[in-house]
Image (cartoon, rainbow, N blue to C red):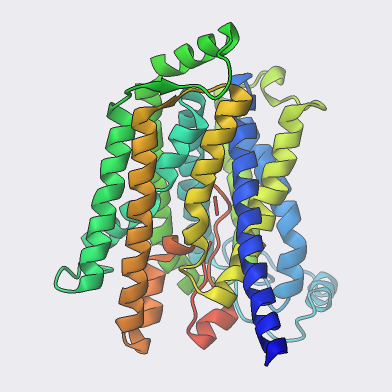
Length: 406
């Protein structure tokens, strides 16, 4: 009896510690990205290198956990493999005839669109918005992604509004609070607070950010809309290629190619693409390995054990961590409007998740999978990350998993 309680407590604490680690890694990524962007790092070069690292880190997981996936039938390029290479690839993957999926034009198209919408547009706009504003201000918009996705789901008739139910009313109230908090954070400044002494250097940096706050806000809104559209696309992607590790790895490869292609059209100078042993290289490795690959695995693990509504419950911690550390390390100011907006967004997000949880409990089991697929953003991290979709085991068991944060 006592041993069972100890074991249950240990398992529960593992999930909590895992999600806290995710929030700490997300906080570090936001702060490191803000610092190097202020120092002039080219955004598209950062995205290119970051997702190369992420693809390399995800490859071992893809080839081990999903070794039954064979991409030997690549119809979209109409190539015939030699018998020797086909057999070698066949046995190296350990598949031995267990062909679960084939890459074709449809899969290729949706993976390409997935990386274009979820990484190039969403993460690219977020980075440029982060550069023009502050990390705390930018994270506010990431917390709005579940609400915007919910609105898109209503418009596309993927989900019902449910105003006649208590759960639906709670969701709508949460959405209104989140939007109100974002508007207050954007439009109202109020009194300014500084956790450390404001030096002249900090004053200049803050003043420069304020001058571009309008442009940064527009970019962050675009990022929020792109992320929400991306999560809607997951419902289609998981139908044609339901293998999360391979999807993430291939999407990262596509994102690197797309970012490099557009980046070279904008800036071909060596200075923009040169890598040195400095904070920029540390941020690239950190973002690709920890903020993408490690976060992916931890969230998937938590979703399996605690359900899809568990990881988002910790998301507001990133907002709090970033606000405090950005003020301490970078010397950014905290305004009364930001504080009020943060509180409303956190309360609204928890209300929305509470309403969604109640709705899922009251829903027939046959409809749960469809509802989770339509609102997969609720299991996502708030930082820009690599996309996650469902595993083949999840589909067979009726339990849907999803992501990945900029």
